[in-house]
Amino acid sequence: MTEKEKTAPVVSVGADTEQSILKQINNSITDFNEFDKGLDNYLEEITGEIEGMRVLLKKLKQSGFKLYGLTNWSDTIYRVMEKFDIFRLLDGVVISCEEHFIKPEKEIYLRLCDKYSLKPSECLFTDDRMVNVLGAKAIGMEAVLFTTPKEYIFEIERICGIKIEQ
Image 1 (tube, helix red, strand yellow):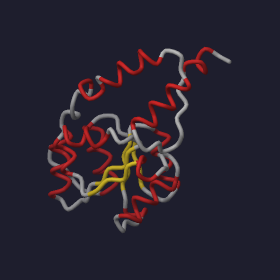
Image 2 (image 1 turned 45 degrees about the vertical axis):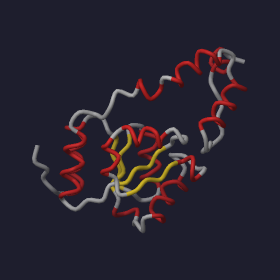
Image 3 (image 1 turned 135 degrees about the vertical axis):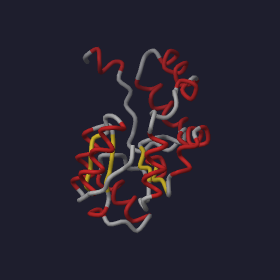
C-alpha cells in the first residue's frame, strides 16, 4: 500500500449524509481526528461567493436564462445554501446525496434534465473540474470549464451568441 492509499479516504458514490461519509472516512484513514477538526470548521472556512458571480447570475436571469445547481455534496449543502443568498438565484438543484449518482456519471446530468424538463442540447453546463465538463458533453450538453468570471462571460457570449454588459 502506498502512502497516498493509506491516507486517501474512500467514500461510496452519492453518500447521503455527512454522518455516513464521516463513518466511511473514519474506516479508511488513520488520522481521523485531524480530518474531523477540519470538517467541524468547514462552513466557517468557506470564504463566500466568487467576486462578480452574483451580478453575472442576476444578468443571466434578467436575460431569460434558467439557472440550476448540480452538485456532488452531502447533506452539508443545505447549510451552505442557507448561509449564502446566491443560491436563491437558482431555479432548482440536483444534489448527489439525494440521487446517489455523482458527476461525472451520466445519470446525474440526465436526472437534472428529467427533473426540470430540460433538453441536454439546450443546456450550458459549467464546472471547475474538466472531468465534469466532459461528463456533461458526453450526454449532449454544451459545457465550459470555469476559471474566472471574466472568462466565463466570454464563453457564455461565444456559445450563446449574446452580449453581457460588464
